Length: 84
Image (cartoon, rainbow, N blue to C red; front, side):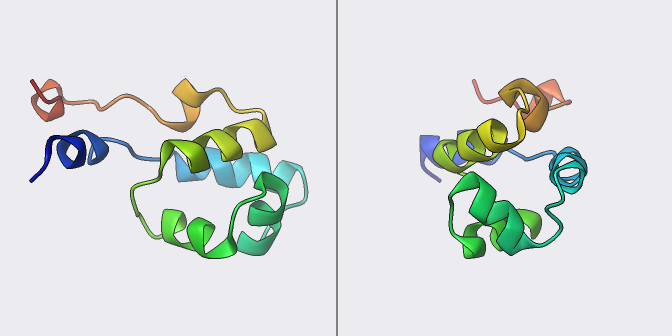
């Protein structure tokens, strides 16, 4: 495993927060969310399926829905998961 892959494994999106913010703006489908964030629908589908998001896509979603990055990508809870 490469060093960047170990770090990326910790990056998880708060899907429920994203879903709530999207619904508040009337965006209920992956297509709606992708359109507002100006990213591909397939990216949104993969994120909702648990794929590790890229920083570019996370940032686009955060900006689109006014979510601070720290809220959208919560810190890993277990210190054992944090790479040295």
